[in-house]
Every structure is written in structure tokens, then in C-alpha cells.
Length: 350
Image (cartoon, rainbow, N blue to C red):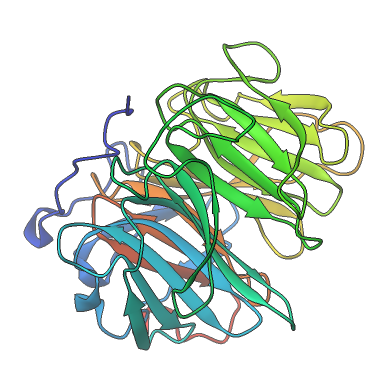
């Protein structure tokens, strides 16, 4: 099962780009490179990010539907996962937008992606939702695309825990000590959040479908904050759910910001002050105020970036060093980069 817009969106027509409906006179409108438009409200909201028109240097390398993006902040690399027939599934760029290489080994149908980077090891993790011999798995690669580790039963979906099985695993997050958080259930048999140890043993799990606390309907993205809390984009239930990193205890949920559509992606800015959230079918990015230690409180929108119709931001990543936000857009079939407003990147390609 897929929510509308995830699987078969067409590329937006360069001549058909238009501002988002309901655009008020109190907004700034920009026509951006690759012809997509977005608006930034400036009277009531803070302007925190702007588009880097020079990234990538050549967008022709995007030859399929771009489903996810990951950043190696330590080495200044950006990885893009795309789908399509007879195309490279993984593209590697520099943070400045120069294409470096591509690889395609043992990747069937990529969905989520994460880069774990330390001075000693760089690993590229991919969740694969394909129906072929590499599908329904979470896989670890080295930066050159050599397969290192496979979690799950390749080519066979399931609900089992021993051995661990997946059905359309959506995304994962690897923390600084190597523990892994996986949201398993982009439609299919499972709706669960699983935490694994460094040696891939299950530490805790929330695994029921439903609308109550710690239950899910299409858990689509997962991330951690600096205070030891796990945040899950519970897309079908139109909310973010929050858990204790160590115990798995449910800490609360945010739903007031998602009355129109649930979140499809969530990440924190490096300073921990904001969450950046994508809403797929609204083609919108939200910047939310992060809660302090203790109660998570209520959701508060600080800034909005409205993309053109059918751009469809699917998953995103934030560079932990520069604060740049990379957005994988399955409708526009590209990845775009947004930089903090006061960064040194020339504004709008100047």
C-alpha cells in the first residue's frame, strides 16, 4: 500500500510551474532553477533557509525517481538513491555539487538511506523495498558500493524477529555509538519501530498497527535529537511520535502541525533548535521549533517552504556540519539543497 503520490509521480513540466495555491501578498515568490517555484512567508514566520541554485552543478545525472538522500558530513559527500530501469541506483556528489561516481551493486528498489561516518569507518545504509532477490532488506555498503552487511531475509518479506524480517522498510538512523533505529512499514505487513544493537540484536521494539500511543500507520522516517529522544514520522496517523532512546518508552506525540497531511521525513538541524519535516503530497517543508529537555510540549511552526505542485518531497537529510538541507523529490526527480539563510553560499546563484 502506498499513500497517493509516492510511487508513480510524473516529472513537473518546466512550463507548468506555478505558485502554490493560497499564496498571500505577504509572501516572497521565487522562480528557481530547474523551474520549480517556492514561497517563503516573511511577515509572520522566520526565514531560515534559501535555495542553493548551484547544487548540483549538472542535474542531468538524475535519471530516475530520486527517493532518498544521505550526507557524509565528515568527508563532504552527498549520496542520492534513485529508482528506474537500467540506471545507476546510487549517485555520489561533493557537497559543492560535483558528480563523483555511481554504483548499482545489489540495489533493487531503494527507499531510505543513511550515512554513518566516523574517522575510522564510513558506511552507507540503504533500505530496499524491491520484490527481487535483494528486496525487503536493510543493507550496509562501503563508500564505493561494496556490500558489507544484509539485515532481513533477502527477497522474502515477513514479520519474523528470529531471523529478523522486513516488509518495505522505510528508513533508518544510526547513532554515534552504532545503534540502529529502523522504521519498517512503508505499506505492507509491518508497522513498527525497531532498535538494534551494534551487533544487530533487537534491543526494543514497538510493532503494532493502530492509532494509539506507540502504534503506527506507515512509519516513514526516524531520527534522534541530542537529548536522547527518538522521533518517528508516523505518516498515516498524521503525527510525529517520540520515544526514549534507551528504554523505548513513549514520550508523546505532535499532531497539531499535520492536520492536512502527515510527515514523510524528519531531521534535526545541527544546533538542535529545529526539526525539518517534509509533507509529500502538499509539496511542503516545515521548520518546527524543537522542544527543550523534559516534556515535548506542543508543535510550533517556525518557517514554511512551499514547493511547486507535484514536486513531492519524499525524504531529506541535514548536513550535521554545515546545516544544509538536502531534499529528495520524487515528483521533480531531483535533489535540491537549501542552505541556512546567513551561510556564505551565494544567494540564488549570484
